[in-house]
Image 1: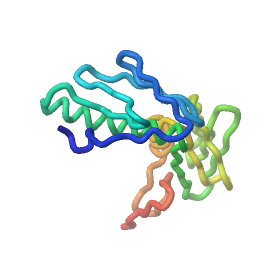
Image 2: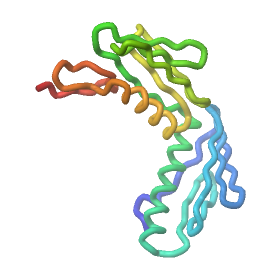
Image 3: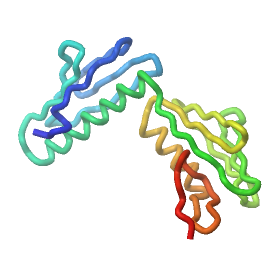
Length: 172
């Protein structure tokens, strides 16, 4: 049995968990998330506790049990309190702004970079150089933050680029 997979997930107040066939739906104050469960695993609700159980003791089933337990825990955390990733722009003339559903980044290229903000994600810009990416789905939030960072990753010579908050770049 997986050590991570056998841990229970506490269902928080104000959260509704629905299991229908191979789908688990979690509804909370910050949205609703849905995930399919692979064959070989089952999900049960018992006294405000969510359990992920494997049907056999194969290595792949144990790995999937730990993975899906963590994914369900992240879903529970996301609908109760949003995930937030903060980014900083460091460099001369680097700035950003949100216009409608677009994030416009000026990162020293000859043209501004325009990113469409996906549904379920909220972006706030503070002081033209600080970006907050918020949402209930950890996977979407992290992917969108990494797309922003990919335009201008931090470089070790001048320390310029798009950095995660409190990230330390070792300078050469």
